[in-house]
Image (tube, rainbow, N blue to C red):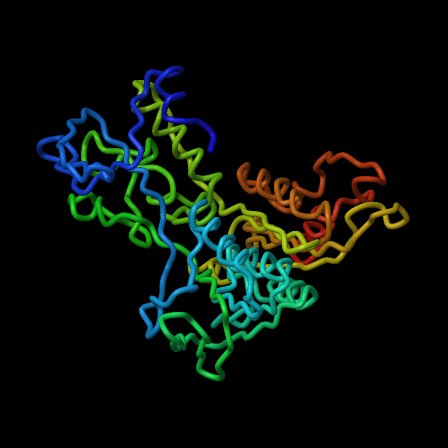
Length: 390
């Protein structure tokens, strides 16, 4: 999409070989075994330095009927185009999305916009498991408002099929008719190749790396959705599959492979998404993660406006801030609201990165004018409420 193999060759002198699959890594001989997918021929390619950037693969349930036609995962441009082609053929009236994460929610909206009757199944009490339940309920309502029927706390059991095509999704409580099923169950690191080569794996099966993105095998590096990260708040290894993280991983690994020196300090899980008009954002730790590492915390949830209340276009915004009991150290934040809400998470992410307390956040010199914010920004209002509890 961005640059052709020819452009790489002409501009940068890089030999890009698409439609070539690496099937084995020989760490002792420092070479990779490559299959040419067009000709089927195999060849060994030597390396001095090797970067593994194999990404992630969508989770697919090992259930009866899971291999039926019109059950679709979404993890590449081509998989999205495939779904588009299926819908363009016409005749599809009912769509079922399995999983309430980022991909599942965005695909549910897309199917609604395409005129389908859409159901979403998730085994959790609320969609968007990266939010606390009290914030996730707002996202659930946003989906209902656009016409998505939610079946929460329901476990997927199997798929019904006829002549090799999916016709229904069976949960522990009901059967939902389906002309197309979208799997939004999340992703796992694509690390089978690395594991077979004896490269150490870490969090959730991702490749273990140090701050320079180097693996446990000398001369081999890893970056992107196949590699683990370090969480700056919990101070523990952490896995997250996001394009922002992958790009920063790649930059650090590339500098080091090229003979420079760079380190990747870590992540905080900052992410944003949008369901129709509703924007969703989060950063840092959520309640269950704070409890898992044994910290005591306080939190506050406030409702405010995205602009001055009297200004045209002002919308609702809900902000949640979590801080460590005693020290007041900021631990995380979540935002759900109308246009102008989501990017406010960057204030919280920056404060987290700097190690701010909520008291320090109250005095941030943030910009104000009625078209952009109330006099007290909603993020600061939430920090102030937590400070009161502290």
